[in-house]
Structures are given as C-alpha cells and as structure tokens.
Length: 120
Image 1 (cartoon, rainbow, N blue to C red):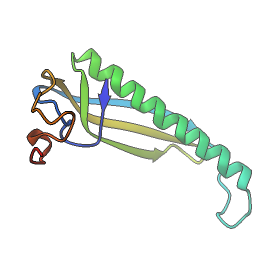
Image 2: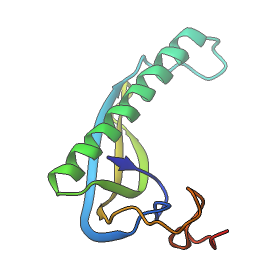
Image 3: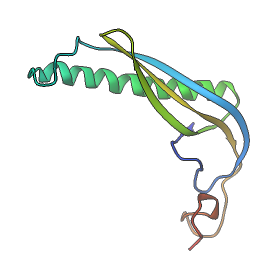
C-alpha cells in the first residue's frame, strides 16, 4: 500500500478514486507538565507514544483503503485532537485510489509528466 501526502505518485496514473479513507489511533500521555518544568523523560515518553499512534493511524488508514479496493492513498493528512488531559486521538485521512500499471516513459526511473515534471 502506497501512502503519501502528495496528490500524485511518480510513474503511476490514478485510474479510480475509491473515496475517503480514515485511520485513527489513541496516544495515552503522561499528564503534561508545563514546558519549563524540566520533565524531559515524561516528554520523551509522550513523544514516543505519539509516534506509535501516528504509525498505527497510518496502518489503519491503509487497512481502510484496502477494504475499499484501493492500492494507494494520496493527499494524506495527519491531525490530532486532545481527549481530556492524558490522551490524544491521531487521525490519518486521505483519498483511496487504484493505480494503473507503471508508466514507462523511457527515463529509467526519472520523473514523469504525470508527476508534474517534464521528462528529461
């Protein structure tokens, strides 16, 4: 599953748009102290939890897109919302699409016209 924030995938054409796909995950956080409180370990733990939630949200986004019959997700955005004082919801949202076969433009792996860049 290709998951990207861009609108296109170099070397591929989007042939079918399946619709919106979403993946969500929750990050449990330590109660966040004031930024100047000097609790570096708590902050590192919270950042690790947030990184895991982002990865899980992207994974679930891929699963949702696959359930729609897609093989890629474009225009992906990650957002987060506070859930009380000790958790964040991370949401990955994008457009589930079906890609056509690779485009052979003769540039040996270089950019394609579909990517908005003229062939070399």
